[in-house]
Image (cartoon, rainbow, N blue to C red; front, top):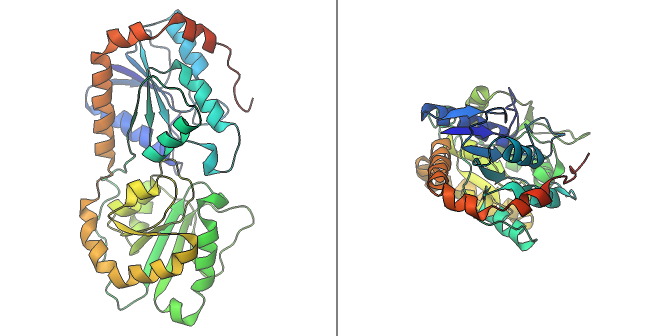
Length: 341
């Protein structure tokens, strides 16, 4: 099997999609799959479109490049479009339409959460075949080895981390928690650490702030805390909570976007107006949730197994999929204008 993954993998701290596709590439190679990140091989079996917006660093090629490849080099390659983005995540406009346009090249579409799938389909996303594969973190790095459970003799240490320093990542709650921990009563009960980038001009007053760091160092930092907090809004398919949970930390998570389907059963959900109540509930029930964390299912190995099994199934069905693909659709897609160019 020859697979091209349309991503420029970035070294060092970067977003979850970059990490997920890097892990998938390594997994496929261990399974004997030939992996590339370009469209130069004329004998590809599968092409994975991950980011059609070519002005972004992570994008290796767009749907137009794929359509050109199918027309000029190899019309037997199957195309999978992995969708992990939406306008709702950062209050942008045009991203959802751009993804709908890009999907014209796809034989199959993978969404990274059921929430994201339902969102796009409700807005007219047209796909002939689709599935949901949840993200997972690398257990060789993010694992509970060395995690110290809370002994109730010290404050409960909350932690979160984000690569994108955008207000929608939950800073309405993080700012509130930063104010709460300055009061003597709560200061004796909980502390808060933020790792990553923050919105321009934002400064924590009482929480501990740490800059973005490598995955290996990040895992060590997470294990020095007790509970993983995420207040992110409209997450399409986040991976940060997976990293915290796989390190053994129970989850205190916002009821928004994909987070309930990733976190349910492994912590406590909250809304902005009941955050303090749910925080105290976590203090009181911490041991119950800590006991459950070794069962947390969202690992990179599981994610990669699901992608590999999908690829095998699609290749088994290649002849039927190629019959379904029409030249009219391909020609109609050529010339779609890049969003943002």
